[in-house]
Length: 459
Image (cartoon, rainbow, N blue to C red):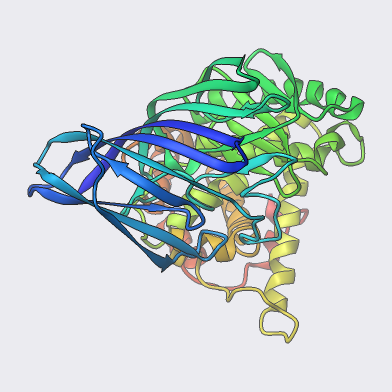
């Protein structure tokens, strides 16, 4: 088995009429007990690999096949295989180089989207949950991470945005060239590239990339203010987030609400709404939700029942506790009420001719492979929210936060199951929760009407 320990990526966007061109140095390591004579990796299917080189610069013989791949907007992935001579022995490391490039077409991954594209307006590329713009080993999962050094070369009129720490940005030969690094292990899911005609506002830990309009400039200042308060809450209650100096917040393209490590995206059609009194709360909830990803997603045991709850369910809930404190306006009660209403509306719609919802299943059955079907659609952002609220009410807000922090601290790198979270809550509260979890997370039993937010019993 070969793992990729580090990436050195030289990326050029819209240079010499080529949409995307990359030369990547891969530090690979044999983690198995037998010699390995083949290096296999995956890459977005629209990108052509021109050559793969060994440490001496000699080309390796390689081939490619196309496989179905649900997470990519093209519906497939390219699997490249290069012959290694001599083989890499157990525990040995070697540096390989791949040269590749090509286009990215407008995406329709999970919803209509302007993401995963490069054109005259800008470049917007996401990590492995959408399409793979850098090589990944064939058996990567949600926990896979590596160190990164990225040189990003973009048109002079654009400002670049990658991930990790920004070391430098300068004009060179009529192009904007920046250097980025993530020296500690960085999840492959959180690797992001973007560039367009932004201006930048920076204060404290926040660096905000915004469109060149008066409305966007005013909004950027508000994001800096509120973002600092959210960060303070997350760090105090959920522990360490991304190990970077700054948080990058960007006004992206339509459907550009993202979380990618220390990069947060707000769609262009929503960005300026933060200064609109009637719409600010909804937009700040989007900010808080995207920002919390880097704090509350633990390492997980992949492809096991319940893993979706940790990866996608947690960020759908834990931002609400911060907004309750920051907005000071009974936000949490409204948030849980919305989840309650949404869940029951969707539950009633099940089986109707006009419904395209996925079937209701017990929450504990949802694996990470189910996230694409249930993300923002059903269960992960409604029934799960209601049940976490019930757990919080059962053990008390202080014990709930204490148990959550203990769980997250314990599982930053040690893979967790949902049962580990329940155990942490039990330890923090000295209460048994297994019967409650088995009944309500382990079945699709109707939730009691007495739990409806606003009723006396619900508190």
